[in-house]
Length: 514
Image (tube, rainbow, N blue to C red; front, side, top):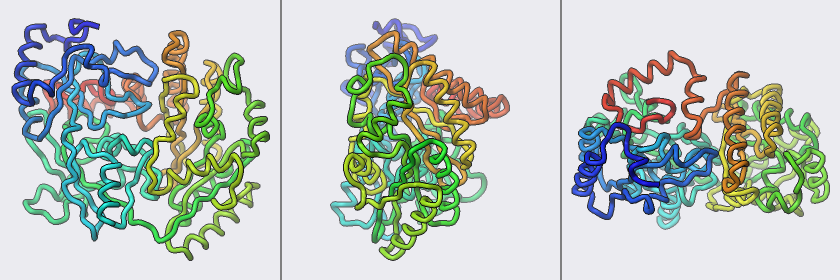
């Protein structure tokens, strides 16, 4: 594809070339890319959409706040929109590609310093390009008693992007956006704001007390395009004295959904910190390709999943989690969880009791709930092809809602011939679950790509119309998702956008905000 096809909207070829010269004067020739053949890292998609709709006009890598301020001045001058990324690996939600074609990707991976870690308080101050692995390595090298609240792709992604997108970690800290304190933000006009306690010169509590004084504005910069976050304070999880993973298996859906109520009550009572309920298909897809066990049309039939489960002796559905604390606390709470799960007919096992094929899935669960970093979860994208997109409707923590949203999602997936890979992740307070599901498809098959796109859009519509909207949206469905949150919210966002970014150069289309 030529650059002509991906010029920023309303920007001429000569204006774009002039802007490139000015960008290169700021960051150096090697840190500005505009040739189509060199834009591949910024133009890959796993989500079901055509790359033409998300093709950037170029990419520029900033090395400092001062670079960003100068880049913003050039972008304001020529009206060139900037799509900001940190690691650029927002897998299953759009990766590094912008929401709309013709944007300049502002890559912050060179800003990758761990600025501070407090060994007593377990707080960190980081730049955008810092990865979870980088922090994990630092903690281990310095023998510090903390864990990171990591997601599945932790080795290659960063906590700043994950926090700003409200991603879910798998330790007891879980919802990443619940565990940060303080930001530094560069606004569209180049001004720098340190939020909350950071507004006080030499403040000692910027990473300790997140609220500051007056309105709490940090939330404006989550899932938005109102500014560029250049520093973020993180809370690290204190390393537990002991931890144990448990699994509660169910052989049918009705029994499994009862676990939603049990998990809710255990969380609200403070017995457990984290738990999930997932269909066994997810574990199977980690180790097998679809063609290895099913070559028929449409979605894999329920009877086949049930047959595979019996053949390798694993439950059709499994609730699981990791308990943390002293050895005495863990053992005591394990007994409480066991009694509650067995009361609803579960086959309960602590980690040392799991055998056979169940060990493969247990190891994945243990990796998620502890400080181990791995990319094993990415084997799931080999199941059908290189395509994958997450959608996660939010539900009240009630078994009836869990079953209702499952039926809705299954209805859409079955209609379009795709398999269900997902389940439920308990939220921070215990009062909600993320009904997280992964749509897997073959991006290299044009017919399947079109079918996956239709499925992706329909599942957003069906769940939102039923009162279960998603909390996080991939780039192809950001506009659609925002519409379901209502015109009053959208009008407020437009007013904020106009006030903070009158030239609309910061990531137009992000979260449906032009």
